[in-house]
Amino acid sequence: MPRKVFFLLCLIVLCSNVISGISENLLAIRIVRFLSISIYFLLFLKYRTQKCKWLLAALILIVTSDFFMLFFEISFNAAIVSVTKGTAYLCLIMYIKNRIDFKKINTRIYYVLAPLILINFYSLYKIICYIQTGPTYYFPTLVIVFHGLSLIFSCFFAGINNFLKNTRASLYFSILVFSFALSDLIVIPAYFMEFKSFYLWERIFYVIALIFIMEHATITTKNYSLNL
Image 1 (cartoon, helix red, strand yellow):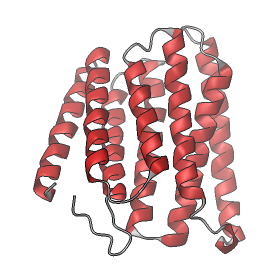
Image 2 (cartoon, one colour; image 1 turned 90 degrees about the vertical axis):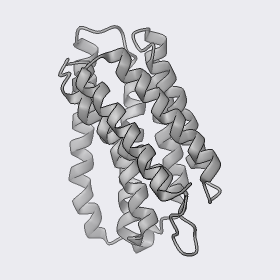
Image 3 (cartoon, helix red, strand yellow; image 1 turned 180 degrees about the vertical axis):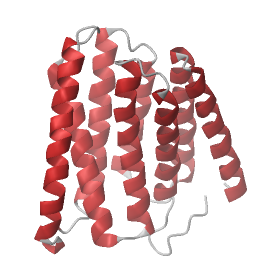
Image 4 (cartoon, one colour; image 1 turned 180 degrees about the horizontal axis):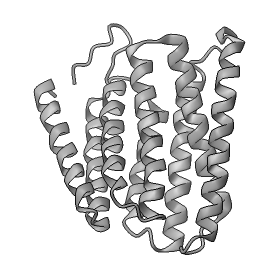
């Protein structure tokens, strides 16, 4: 796909998501979300230049998650959304973990990351407490923990990989992982606390993640070409 065509498509998808986010119409947001991931999933299948089975598995799971999100108010579907999204983060970890040489990591990095991870664990605990005591339907605690931990560790692996390699491929992977994570985190106050203005930022980060999953997947191992 020519870069100009890809850029135009990204612009259309971004504008559609921004409009749906501004509208604060939950059904419109979910429909546009599902259509967006479906478009990029098809592009991924057609134009990827690397054999990324774990990346493909992650995308399939995210598509599945976004489909069930259309009916999120049904408790069973809500659990499926979190389980499939959490499993998608595990697939992203599997995709990157064998590329990381942990022996090369300076121990000082662990001292820097440890407080950040603890903060994330505490945030996850507060989220669980709010959701379980808030004015919402029953949501299994184990599902929330699984989703949250997989999100935290996928960010950890992506950050470590980019720190060690500092290539375009590693940077793009970090951007897509952190953007998916931010999207998931921002939607919590938007939905459960009814801060509806947050939907706009959730949509923006989600589209950024979709764009960079394509950019990362289409980089060739020889010259990091981005010709789609």
